Image (tube, rainbow, N blue to C red; front, top):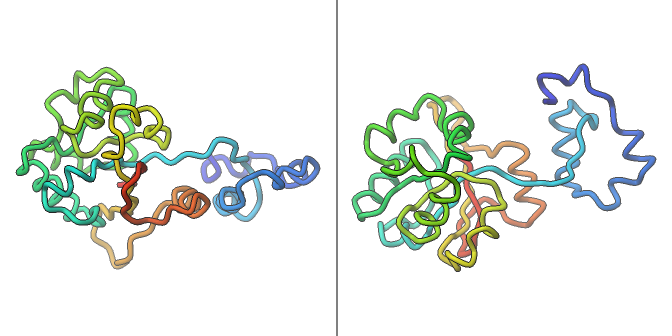
Length: 206
């Protein structure tokens, strides 16, 4: 919104100041809004979340994986090891499947599909079938969703759904260090969850 319609958006700095909005707002997310707004506040963060991959780290461990992937090649290798261990690498539901294609995998979507890394149910899963019967029940390793997911499946998954955040580089380029998207990076900083693996629930942007 900021990049496409920024020139048409109202500067909200005075409005935020008049209402002392920053007294209770998340400082990291306010900074992120200013960053994408070209240095000024053109949007207001009020319900922060990240949209990313959630991992079942018990499956990762059974597959001999000790960290989440940070490059596209590592991602494909991770999927293969999970498949070889007898699990489904990736599942999803109809409610989020468009985000899987559009936000996170772009053109390389063909590789995971052709290599059998998607759940056999992925085309017919009606939310919350994939997240509850595959991810939370421990048959699928990865699921794209928002940061509200842990609360939706905590009674089913317990501690099995584990946190890991990393940036996946889809294309080879001169830049070699992975970078999280601004809003994801700010969110993780503000919640004191740096991009790393832990034993609790959260996510990883691909």
